[in-house]
Length: 263
Ligand SMILES: [Zn+2]
Image (tube, rainbow, N blue to C red; front, side):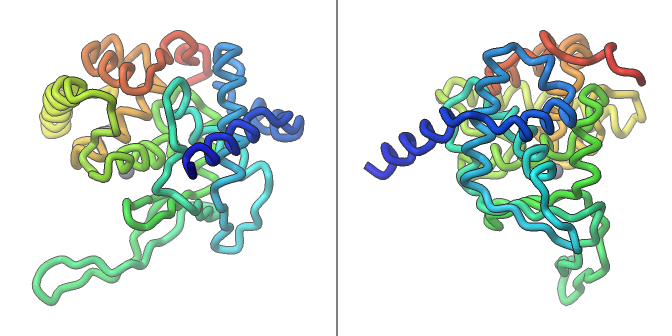
């Protein structure tokens, strides 16, 4: 019953007229939006209505929240939800936004009694049990402004959130059938190993070599490349592109800005 009510509420939110001021923010800050097929644009705006109604935003480090900040972040996050049955990042309740790169002072356990309490410069982070996601606003905005450089902080952090949908942090978002997991695991582990070798050898890669850190970072980095450099990714890693395309049920190579944006 609760699920039915939630779906009904979301349906009502998606059907509300989209504020024209918000639409202007999206067309101004997300050049990729105008390149999307019309039905995807409509679906995206509906998702943004639900996302903004359900998620709590908090300005940190003196940042005063504006509609521009909330809408620019929401629209990028919702790009990952198109064409799929979605529960709108169910593990996530709050999005904390800093004006720019911030320093994380969490103590990290190294070994024995040794803790690293030094500041750690960061642009964004999220964790499964935290219920929150942290972003640097200047980088979130910059990531959207160039939709073809392969780097996008918001897509990266929300890809981690998708990874948590199945209650494991293993670089595998919730997929539909068991058979999907087998194919997914085979392709992802092969490509992850290839990125690690390329990173060690210093070979140029389409994927950011930060993805060689672990399978979860690999999935987040692949998501950035899938949406921002789909043609390059498809050309160099056809199997990976096809597998991730099945997961997202999208083909960004059709509307990519690769080659259309100034370098
Ligand atoms: Zn990450």
